[in-house]
Image (cartoon, rainbow, N blue to C red):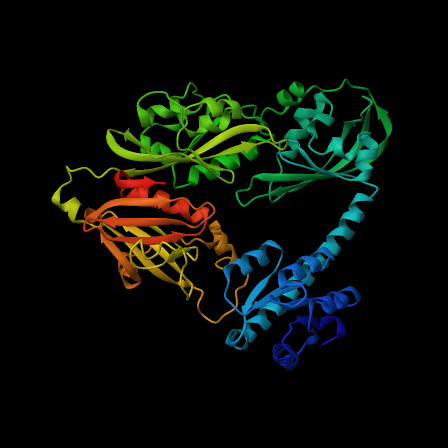
Length: 580
C-alpha cells in the first residue's frame, strides 16, 4: 500500500486501556495508522498540525466532551469520519452527535470488542467514499474551469428553453451577466422568424440521432444579432423524451440584421407546443413527465392551480370516484369536492393556495403541518353512495422563484364498516396496514405503570398493525438496538431517533408474521377508547382502553411516526379515537 492509501486515525479517550485496545486492533489491520490522545485539548493540537481520515472520540472526556470536540473539529474544517464512543447507550448522545456531524456511534465495554470488525469495515468504506467524492469534486471543478473558460459559447437548457448553465464566452457575446442569463429562455434569444425552423430540427432529434449542427442567429442585449454555428446535443430519459439540451456555438463573421427585443408573450406563442401557461411551468414536456408520474401512483391524487382550476386528476382517483379526468380537468369553483361531498366546498388544497391571513380567518379545523406536507382532519363522506372515511395530505408546488403555482392533494380513504355486512364479509379478516420503527417503545403493562415516560432497557423497536378485526403490537427484530453492534448514522439508526420516513417500515406483513412477533393484541369489539397524545416536548403515546378497564400504552418519540399511526388508527376504528 502506498503512503496515500494509508488511513490515519486519531483516537481520543481518557482511559489508557481503551486507547491501547483501539490502537492494537487497528494496527493489526493493514493500511491503518493510529495516533492517540488522552484529552480533547491535545487532540485539537494534533488536528491543527496533522491530517487524519477519522477521529474516534469518547463522549465523556475530562476537558471537553466528545460532542463539543466534534463541533470544534468540524468548525476547523475537518471533513473526515467522526465516531463517538460512550459508556452508556444514551439516545440523546446519538442525537446530539448526528446534529453536529458525526458518522458512527459505538458503546464501550464489550461493545467495542464485538463491534471492532464492523467499525473497521465502516471506516474503510467511509474513507474510500470521502476520497472518491473529493476526487470527483476536484475533477468536476477542473472540468467546470475548462468549460467556463472555453472559447466556444456553451449553453444548457431545458426542453422549454429555460437556461440551466452558460459559460463566460456565452455571457460575453450575449452581453448579459450570468445571473441574468440563468433562468431566462434560450429560445427567446433566437430571432422570432427562425423559431419554427430551429425548434422543428431540435425536437426532431432522437436517442439514435441526438445531435445536429445548425447555423442561426442569436440576439445580443443591445438588440443586434450575430450569426453562430451551433452544435446541439440532446439528453433523453428512458421513455425517449428530451430532458435537457446542450449547445456549443462558434461565431460566424458578419453581422446579421437588428431585431426588436422579443416579448415573453411572443416567446410563449412561438413555442406553444413546448410550453404551458396553465400553471406557469417552463416546459410542457416537464409537466407531462410530472403528470405521467402522478398518473401511475396507486393513491388517488388531484391538483389545482393557484386560481382553483383542476390541472391533474389521476387514474386512481378516476377509479375511486368514477369521475373521469377528461371531465374534471379545467373545472374550477371547487368542483373537485363534488365526488366526495356531493357539492362544491373547500378541501385541503384550498388551504394551501390561499394566503396566510385568509388561513387564519378561514374554517379549516384539524389541519396539521409536517415539514412541507399538510394533513387534513378525517371526514365522513359518501363515494359512489358508499360511506367512507376520508382524509387528505397536501403539498404546494412552487416555481424556481418560490412562487406558488399549484397545490396537490393525495386522498386516503377507508370504507366504513356497516352493520349490514353479510356473514361471509364479517368472518373474513383483512389486513389494513401498520408501521414499525425504533421510535416506537413499549413500557409494558397499564398506562399507570408507564406514566414516568421512561423506557426500560434494552432498547428495541416495536410496531403496530391492524386488520379489520384486531389491533396488534409487535416487537420488530429489525429494530433491536440491544444487540452489541455499532450504530451507523444512516437509515434505521440515528434517523430512527428522529422518526424520519427512511427509518419507518410500512411494508405490508402477513397476519401469520404479525402473530409470531406479537407483544399485545386486542379485538376491535373489545376496545372502548383509543387515545393518541401528540409528541411535543415529551414523547407522545398511544393508549388502548378495553372493556374490562385495562389499558396498554405505546410511546411514540417522533412526529413522523405519530402521523403514520394516526392515519392507521383512523383506518382501523376512527369512531373511538381521541386525539390529545
